[in-house]
Length: 273
Figure 1: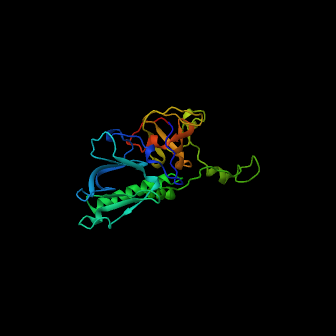
Figure 2: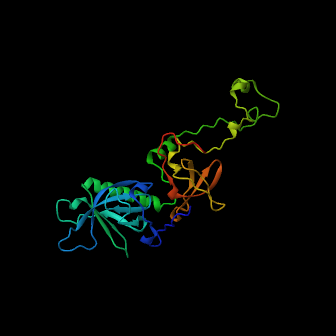
Figure 3: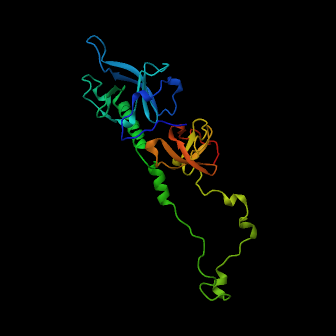
């Protein structure tokens, strides 16, 4: 259950990444064919080689093809910055290039099929980098606007009985403004449904819910066990740079490995909250 500890404050060893097949990769955010610039090439060899590239939530992989049993290379993107780089080529595809760079590390250069595709790769990688380096849960602008537009209703009368008059004295005007409702309209205070957790439903707070990718047993007392498909409410990303989030499931709160969670892939995920 222990994920690799990723921190922007240190460089991560490429050797920490295990060999994996394309089919076994999980949490894929973007994939496709790119041309990779060779680190060393002979006078007669091609400078650019076609590679099948895959980006997940922390690692960039490149394979010889989408059927390969092992990557030709991979690296943690948290160590890098990425940008479009039109100076890598002098031909008609010079505007299709982008580059990963990091002080003290080798750079990686790639060419996409079009300038638009290159921008899409850069935008997606930068989105993942912001998420890796963030300590807060990202929220879409539309959701923020909806929260601001929500009105607050206060139906609770906190004033003294009788509009502030002495106990037992109620004016005729005060009696007229109160409507007597049928008894069945009030919920039973002993009903179990009224004691449910006040955490918002997943459909109204989608950005804070993640789904378990596989079964995880708790190795420590502060870890949250869950099964594949469980819908986990993420309370905090305070320990995001160490690879852990704080989640809630079935009323229990504990830490979960972020690499074992993903955005819900179904409009009706498994309700285990």
